[in-house]
Structures are given as C-alpha cells and as structure tokens.
Image (cartoon, rainbow, N blue to C red; front, side):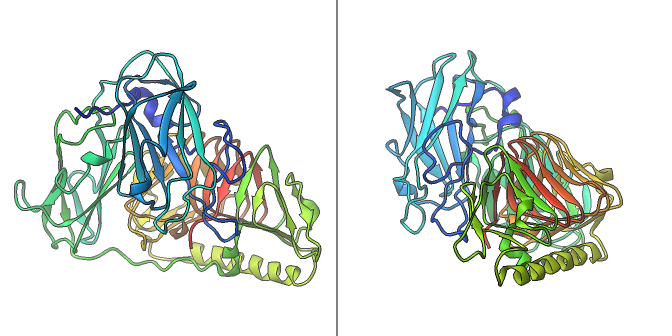
Length: 488
C-alpha cells in the first residue's frame, strides 16, 4: 500500500522551495550553498534542485516523503533507489523511488522515520539529463532532522486565480490554485483539476502542471467569451503524507471578450551578457556563488571587492573562485572599457523602456503589497513601493508570457520570501523596474526570480538566492548569496 510521508503543516510554508544548491568540485557538505553546473562554460545555466525538506530543516514529521524538484528535465529511467538514497548514519533507509514529469523525484520510505534523528539524502551523478549527460557534476547531499510526530493535517487551497466570482477574465488565461503545503505530484492531473462551462459538463481540454504548492491548468484553446466557468479540484488530490483535501475546491468566474494584452520583452541589449552589472561597485562578503559575468563601469576594478579576483594575463578580465564566469571593470585592457560603456548604456535604455511602457493592465494592485498573491502576465504599475513579505508571491503564466513591474518606490522582499514561478513562467521574462531612492532590498534567505532594473542600488542580504540578473545604476551588494543567470 502506497503511503506518502510529510512533515508538519506548520513547518512547510517556511521550508517549501528554499533552495539547496550544489556546485561542481565543491565537495559534498550538506551545509554548503553552492551551484551545480551542466558544464564549465560561463554561458551554462545551472541545474537548480530545490528539496522538501530543505537542507538543515528540523522537527520534520516522521511520515515524511523526500522530494526534489529540478529546473532541468531529466531522464526518469535513471532515477532509482540507487541514484536517490536516504540514510541515518551508515544505515540505509528502504523505500520506493519514483519520478513525476521528468522534473520531480520522490523518495517514499517504507516505514516511518525514527524520531529525533539526523537523516542524509543523496542524489548521485548517475542521474542523467534529457540529453543522456550527467545532470549533476557532483553528488547532491543534504540533511534534515526529524521531530517526534506524524503529519495528519489535510492540505487546503489558500488562493486562486482567477478569484471566485471574478468577471471579465481574459479568454486566454490559465487557472491557478495555491495550496497550504506541497502536494503529491502523482495526484495532480487533468482528472483532479478540471474546468467546465457548467458544473458536471465535459471538462475543457488542457494541460495541468504542478510546482511546489502551485497547480496550474492551461486550456488547450481560448475559453469561450462572456461565459461562466467552474473550476474544480477534487478530493483525490493529496499532500505528500497522503492527506487528501477535506472537500473539493469549487469556484466560478466569468470570461470577458478579449485576450490579455501582449507585452514585448524589455530589450537588455549587451547588458543581458551580465548576471550583475553596476556603475559604482559590486561587493560581497561571505561565501557567494555567482554564475555568469560581472561588470562594473565607470567604476574601476578596485570597486569590485570581496571576490579575491585575479587579473587574466591579457588584462581584459579577471576571475574569481566565487564566480563561474568573468569579472570586467572599466580600467581593464581594450576592448573591455568600450564594451562596458555600451552595456551600461544598454542597461539605462532598458530601464527607460520598462519605465515608459503605457496602458498598464494592473494599477496600484493590492495597494503595493502582493504578499501571498498570484500575479498573471501583464504590465503592473505602482506609484509607491512594492512589498513581498515572507508569505511570498506566485508568478503564473507560460514560457512566452511577459511581466513588467513598474515600481515608483523601493522594492522590499522580506526575509524568507519566495518568488514562485508556476505554469512554465521563466525568470528571463520577468522585469522589476525600480525607481525608488533606496532601491532594492532582498531579505535574508529570500528566493527571488527575474531581471532587476534599479535606478539606485541592489542589496542582497545574507543567504538570499537570485535566479535572474541584477542591473543597478549604482551598486550591487552581496552577502553569501547564490546569484544565477537565467536560461536564454
């Protein structure tokens, strides 16, 4: 009999999707924050794997199921009980290993885990990607400690998009539901999440995807205009402990007559060659891992601090043990100075482009506090600052959708806040244009996605992670962070 394991519901929200990131050649310490690369070139995009439970978690329920989510498609035939293991000390834990959607791995222990015990999970380099090459350059190892109880709390739907009784919904929108905790991916399907014009009618065809605590239904064709739809999530959906929804979630909304506005992405020009680009300084403290190139101009190399960088023999760039890529500064050898001048100009042009987009789809939404909300594709405008608390925010849409956030004040992302991407949304298509006098503050252990275009500075506090680009017209300040360029 299949029984899924999970830790307490009270702990999951703070733990869900806080990334455990590993890198080639950095050893296997479960407490390290590093990045695993598919190859060693600076144009590569790392394989980022998030886990439930996260590395270092404590008080985990005894009926926990171990889950790992990859941002790269893997070969499911290489995921097995020999490539995904769990142990306490030298004692291996028996269990069933499965995969869902070629992006999610699950380890289901045969029996409950021992109380108050340290466990170590391992995913080996024998797991291959879709091209039959190694998914990870080094074994991925993380640890957690159990508590003394089991999880018996049923999941709940905390938020939907469109909202209940929403009207004038664009006919090309997907339908999204947020849950109070992670789900068992095998219970998420077009039969457990349906959309129909009337309750009980034949469901509209579409695809259903799932990531962490977010379920998305994308209709195959546009919805009918001026029509009431009923979305249903059945009680066959369970959390990772096998706890089912207590009652089916059913809500309705009514479409309008038009599709959503189509935004062109912000053209970064050669500024898009950098994961971090700043005018006055780039600094770091602690153990930072940057994947991509860093540029600073008109400031000189002396304003790149904390990276222990070494100038290359031809003088055009420097390298650092903290950077998988190159570091460029305005006083390096030709052609670096002129290249940087062009890139900084392109950064300024991109900022002006993002700030100058007109006819926003959403104005002053949620009074500048989007915490715990779902954001569909479109142009957003706030005449104030924007806040994301530790409740996080979910950005949902397809791989071709665009989000532009025009923020007149500062962008504040609180400690532990998670920007979750759902439905295929990509970090490279999300643009945060920030005009505030202070700039951008990403809190400790926050998990942020998107391209930041800041008129002032960007401060990334201790342990925060970024998948995107940090483009600042003053300084970028890091502290033991993982900053990773998005896939092109």
